[in-house]
Length: 448
Image (cartoon, rainbow, N blue to C red; front, side, top):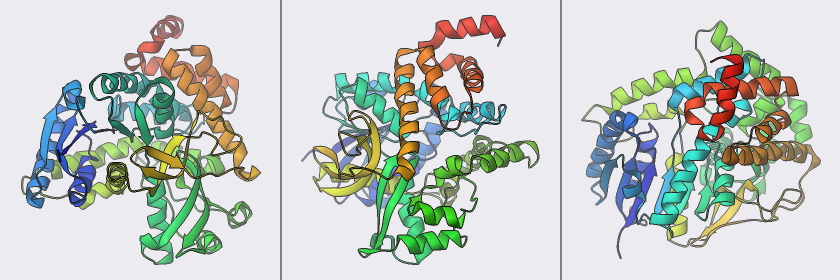
């Protein structure tokens, strides 16, 4: 049987050693022959460093995988079996703007949530559509595994506007399973969480250990100060009465909604007083250190320092999903997938994040049905924002973009929404071809 060809778009990412490790660990069940790491010319220096490490990792493991480094995306995609996307348009400099602009108006500044997530989506949509055009032409049978944030929203763009077979993926659910296992001091394979919601807005409706419902035990431990967060989210503690009334496990990103004022103050303090800067600026320092480590030609494995980057468990999630498709495993995975009636009350064609059975034909979500009013209002509000954002980003529609910004639960007023939108468009002008005429109009009105 011929080996598999994998194209990794954004191959110069500091996350790449994660996915290389994943393919090495599963080589016994996933016959990968070629991994093409793709990046843009400006990122070639990073690609060469990460690529050299990837080659050393493969050599040390003794697996027969060819690592190809390239800026030729079309050649990488041609006849690929799987394409993974992990790119960031504009790099960390653009992310820093996403985090700083909203804070001017006392609004949360975060790369995937709220106005920051909107800005990132606007930059990403034109590029993901180009990639999908290449896949449709050069690898029509390939699966696209999208890890690019905002993952659910970008997956929805692909679902609605292309013919590409796509599944969206995030490391938050697998991270939550591992964190709950740590809290309960059990092996993670014994923990199962029933997930429902959207990407970065997902709840654990039930937590099970060996089939026994331990949801309340976990909530009690969180109430007592146990940590359940990601590297990029401050570990603000949950209110005990709120958790008990919710009766479900919130994901770390819920702090941005349930603790909005405290999170905004924390961000502003980090910039104004602490000297830490935005999370993007902190990550930039982490990345500098990582690439210095990666340069060491004696390094032959994923370094521990990568855990500080926030990409933990990426390889577990991504490569396990690819194996489930290739090997027709009918295995449970938490993915971003078309709703198609899974959650009652949401349109059939939108993308949700739920547990699904994955086989060679794709991801088949497990029916959720009606959801509690404790969470459906927030889900519907954010999903309305995502639907409007998808339309605005694909069509370059300013009015649709304004409605998207105004409807988001974290944006306090239309006045603020319009200021945010105009700032985002001007600050990202080189990355937004779909909005160029409106951007020129805004620059004429306000200046750059």
